[in-house]
Image 1 (cartoon, helix red, strand yellow):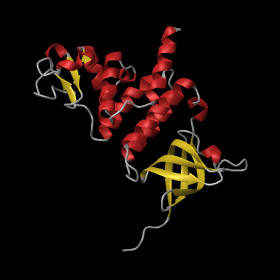
Image 2 (image 1 turned 60 degrees about the horizontal axis):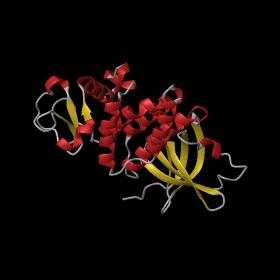
Image 3 (image 1 turned 90 degrees about the vertical axis):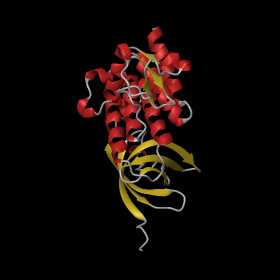
Image 4 (image 1 turned 180 degrees about the vertical axis):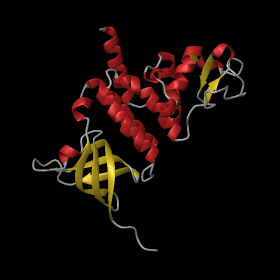
Length: 254
């Protein structure tokens, strides 16, 4: 069996970056062919570097990379699309940070996930154009859980399979979906959902082909329930949600 070629091409979206030494930078990328990859751009922090402006946060670039022992090396980069001038808005940047952190945390390195890549492309464009970028995050979270095979069951009670009496349900994170009144765990009353909330929860998680405009306007109860599922599967609350919450509270107090 021949060894894999060391050089390869990929389209990639930048999730985060950190400095290395005096002139280099390590980028965490989400690529179309290998999923999440860490790669170093040598000399990128020097004034004459032609690569730096093509690797901004959540920008998409066509890269040539060289496989390394510990880190791949970015040898060339051509910009495909960037929303940087719109994403520097505090609200858009905070929402984008949540998106990037979730992909970085949930996705294993070197595992191609074309559905997740397409999802990331779409949400980046949406965040750049949205008047309220935070409103797009709950839908992204549910769609990402679906791609990962972790989508909460919401069509019927996740425990007994029965309908929701009066349309009301409860977020049952340990069971992996919504529970009816008879089956609900009594310690999760904070995640109670009205019939309207259940409808919103389902709309937020609907595939793009069947999604309605209501999916872009998450109700507070549905948002809290989605956050609970994400935190449960991740094992912690994403750090970026703190900034998103602070911005939301500041906006509501004005």
